[in-house]
Image 1 (cartoon, rainbow, N blue to C red):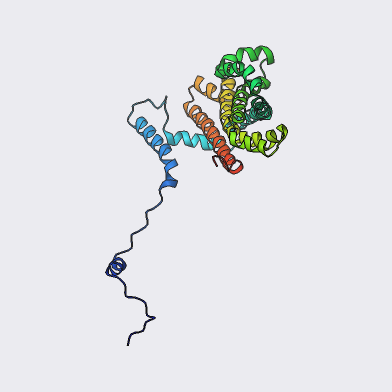
Image 2 (spheres, helix red, strand yellow):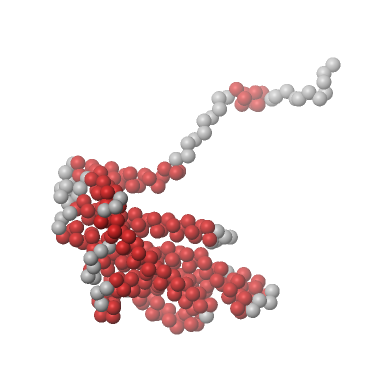
Length: 276
């Protein structure tokens, strides 16, 4: 007599599946993807030098350049210039952020007010900041204030533009829902429009810090300066110290990349509801 509570016999398909060898899991190579581009760059760079396509006096080997970079950032004069450029960029960015975000939000909440100054914002935003260096030289003279001021001006326009459009393009459903629930204009402004503007404001801030860094380095090159990465790059080029020149260029790129990554992380953490 069979036991009615016993488990049913496995089907032929199940038995065959049990006999099949386990499929090994695929390795996750996605974490290595960001390193492929830099690795290819250094491989091509090394081949170009080894094959004599470019003279070493114009393009040093990558290993020598990286060694100069690491030695300089470990406590040499390159570290001092790196810190000076970072400080000037930080000053310019903070001025642009503190002034630009509130100004953009206020202008965006009163669209007619923004439209009245839209031409000026777009005009100066489209004008290369380097073309304004003579103007800032006349106003501020040859000083650190000049470099910070012109970088802050260029970054400010980007922040104002993005913050204003973030408010103007706020989701109409949320604004209407707040109005239906009896919210006042001030409540709509602080509880809806400001929050809606955060994501585009962060995009503007991320672009602004990159713009501030670019302008600071250009200003260090062409406005009287005795420190900073821009000054170091132009001085190394004039005396044909190519290792130091390329090391300074790489350090400027590393600085810009790190600042961009930091803002991406901050954006994901603070504006985590973006797109929902």
